[in-house]
Structure formats: C-alpha cells, structure tokens
Length: 454
Image (spheres, rainbow, N blue to C red):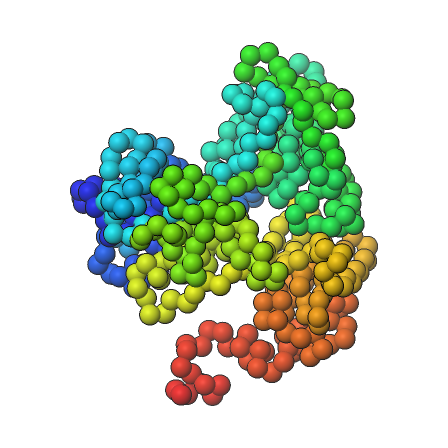
C-alpha cells in the first residue's frame, strides 16, 4: 500500500485493477487532486495488459513488458493499493458506504466503483471441477499455470516416447488465443466447440470455414459441433476427454475457455439491479447510492440495434472507466455514456481478423450483405437503410478503422465512393466536415477550423 495512510475510509474506492478501474482512477485524480483513492484487487499484480497473456506464452512479450501503465503510476498519482487474494472484497454495504475484504478489514468510502470485470463461465461437464491439470485462460496466473503444465507434460510425454496433447474447450476469441499460445509448448492441440463454427460470436459460417482451414495449416485441430461430455482420469488428473460424438481423446491438460460472464455477484449481493450485466445509467451509476460500475461487469446498450448485453472488450472498459471516473469526481467535462458496439481486432499466427458491429443479421431484419473473397482474404459488409452496420475483415486489415468510423458516425453510404467495399478506403473518401474532424481530432475544443478561438 502506497504511503502510510491508515486503512479506514477513502473518498474513492475502486474494486478492480484492470482497464476500467485504473482508467477511472486516472480521471478521478485529474479532476480531484486531493481526494483519497484506494484500488483493491484479488490479483497480486499491478495493472497489466490482459489481452497480452497469450503473447507471453508465445514468446512475443515478457512479463516485465506487459504493464499497462508506467511502474510509478500509482505512486505518482497518490493512489493507494491493496493487491492480493486476501484483499478481495467479499461484501458491500451500500447504505453504510462500507466494503469488507476477505481478510476481514472494513473500508469506508465516499464513492465506489465496481470494476470487477468478467469471470469464466464453467460449463456443466462431468469431471471438470477440482482437476489439477485443467486451467482457465483469463488472467496472468491462468496463463502461467497452463504454460508450466504444458512444458512439464511435453517433457514427460517425450520421455515416454509419445506426443503431448492439449484439449481446449471453447473456440471463441479466448479459446483460440489459448490454443495458439499453448501450441508452442505441446505437440498437438484439439479445440472443441459446441457451436457449428469456430468464433461463433465474431464470424459467419463462410469466414469461420476459411479461418479454420488456415488454422489447420498451423496444426490446430478445430472441431466445431463437438464438445466434451466428461473429463476422465484417476485422482485429480485428467487423462482423457469423452466427446459428444461418442469418441474419446487422450490428453495431458485441458484449457476450459467456454466463455465469460460479468462478475456481478458482489454488487448484486448488495442489492444492485442486474440485467445481462449490472444496470447503469448514462453516468454509469448503478441502482445503489454512490456506487458506479464500468467495464465488462456492466450491461451496455448496443448503439446499432438497441439490444442490451455485456461488452467484454478492453477499449470499452477504458471508455467506461473514463466516464465513470469523471462523473465520480464531478468533472464538468463528463459526457454521458450512451452505449457502444463491438469492435474486435485479433491475430492468429499469420492471420488477421477484424470485425465490428452486426455481422450475422437476422434474415427478417432488412439487412443486405456484400461479400468479397480474394485468395486468403475474406471481407463481408452488412448494410441497412443506406448505412454500414458491420463488417468482417479476414486477412484484409488495411484501414479497418475507417469502416468503424463510417459505422460510428452513421455516414450515409450514398455520400461515399461506389467501390468503398471493394477497394481500401482512404481519408479523402469522407465528407469534408468529417474529414476535418478526423484530421484535427487533437485540436482543443473552442478552436475553429483556422485554429483561432471562437
């Protein structure tokens, strides 16, 4: 804990130390230079780039380089911290403005932010619980544990004259990144997926089939439509997986990456309203007095179809953290959070994938689709009423941000080039006003186009 302040009461208590929590703390401090801030987290680490855990296993980064903020981030901003499992907040008394940690300490607060993120969804698979060689893939400790187990299993398998094998349950973004990362440390990786295609939430059937073929070229054996029915083995170790197609796979370790859900238990236990995540207003305040929420834990309005759902994405967590922090500190610059939509950017080996918005529209929704395939590249654009509503760009990454801007700014396609989707767009394709806005986004408010004060 930074400084010598007694653990009694803080002006701001932030529960969670990832993208939303630290961003909120940063914006609180920018507005309120004197108020006391405490961040608590069950993880023992300073904030790190959670999306980088797969790159750590692949050798593309190191643990020292995974920090999301500078080493002196907390101290430089006079932010107190309590990191470690003993400091996990286990109960919240919103009426009394008090939180209790696992070690029994009580913390008083003026305002509180719930930034607890997501927890893994644990599927009801027989024999999954309590196994020593079954791992999640959501935290740094998850990744390090799976990494060590994979290396030990491969060494033992080779000594016994056989190949090592990992089974990954789940072919979403987390599952496929886990499969890619662990493939560098075992001989075979089999990826199971209950849905009929890999990446069911971010790809369509055709794009998924193309990517699956490309992953197979790197040794990933993806099996959509098949999942685990039971994990088998003596004692605490899994040695084989019974599959829903009736077959059995021998294995050395299992990574369970079926999906995540908002970690709402703490807030809901205190009486907060929950939908598909914590219900918050445009100021990100929950239904509890002086309690806000940001990041994966919240329910977000999809700006494209007005549906409500969690949005477990790093950029969204940062944006919500900023908004929550500004409102908590009473910043006059605070802007309401009206909602968002999904934007994904990920790579697998030498394949790039960018998706955004609505990509698998309902047939009766009045949507239109345009698809372009060239070699290993696959592109799909979904439109409705003359507006771009979503896209898939597989191995065609150039200027995806421009397409995202077209969605975000609701630019009528009639104002843009006819070959917008066939060719890579450039900034000159935008209308004049929007092009100016994009090129001069760094200008402070209050400057006109000549750079003079209004």
